[in-house]
Amino acid sequence: MFARLFAIRTPLVKLIAGLSFVALASCDMATMPRSGGTGPKIDTSKPVPVALLVPYDSAQASDIALAQSIENATRMAMADLQGVNIALTVYPTGGQAERASAAASQAVANGAKIILGPVYGGSAKLAGIPAANAGVNVLSFSNNPDVAGGNVFILGPTFDNTADRLVRYAVQNGKKKILVVNGENPAENAGAKAIVASLGRNGASMMGQTSFEMSQTGVTQAIPEIATSSRSTGADAIFFTSGNDGAMPLLAQMLPENGITSPGTQYIGLQRWNIPPTAMSLPGLQNSWFAIPDVALTQTFSNRYAATYGQQPHALAGLGYDGIAAIGALVKSGDANALTAQALTRSSGFAGVNGVFRLLPNGTNERGLSIATIQNSQVVEIDPAPRAFGGFGL
Image (cartoon, rainbow, N blue to C red; front, side, top):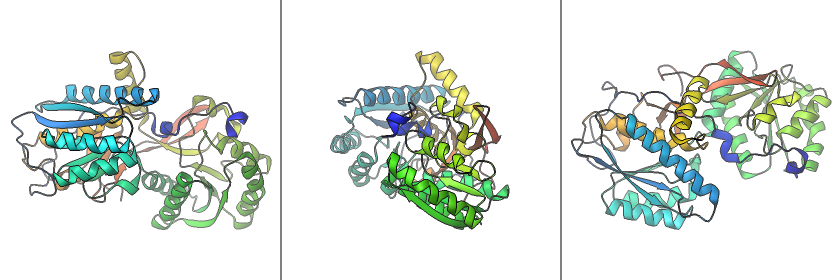
């Protein structure tokens, strides 16, 4: 097991740690849809009923901590709203899909005009059904695009968005011939698929793809093939799907031993290689590229949260803030159709603690991300995140 080799394991949920803060975006009336769409009409002169579905009552202590952190960040966002009154009701899901569905049914019966949460993809999918029957949209904290669509939007960062940001940067910096390397599990297979699609969209060439069994033996056996493919194809970059809680430490150790080092052959990571902090001391990860939220905004939010609650926010906490940021910016317009799907997908997007983001008609999202590297065991931002969409993005 990787855990026995490298004492730096961390939950996968920390892939989206390092959330950021920015003041709520004001409504852009030029891009604010005035016509209706799928969603309820609201009375913006009164408190807007919002349901928050989080995994309180779970048997897992980590779920309880997650629920509390999301609720805390959500209430921080509500306190930051100006001219908007949110009536928040919290519904425990126990971290279970069936309870999330029941909670969504209760929320719409109680008059909720939009649902924020739940966390897990399966829960979001089931919660979306009673919400759809009531004409209510769901802003889930999931990052699983398979549950997005219809009335369900996901707030979590997606592989497609991260891959696009990194591939665009690579092409702009002369790294156009890219080899894809992934572990053989559903998450990394999905990541590899996103990378391959991004290469075609952004003018890069795919120089091959190598996968490996998720074990020490599997990685060890794949090293010669990866090294040979890199040299024989003339690849100038390798795009990895693995993180530091899995195969990446072993890859970053053994590939340099086989003559493949970054930045000569640029290492690019779909996951955040600065998590946990101890991973930044790995020699093989120096001068690699990966995507992170805006560095300055990340620190601002973390500091605010810690000052308010006495501890650092959970990796997902900022998504609660983002949801309220979007709702608040739309409701502030005074439009009765402010929470329709058409309004939620306005092209100008929103600003929250993760930086600028926008919801897409297919239920996924696009987020502004920074490009970072590791130098002397420290994270260095090398290309700042955009603060507005403009010409950025799709």
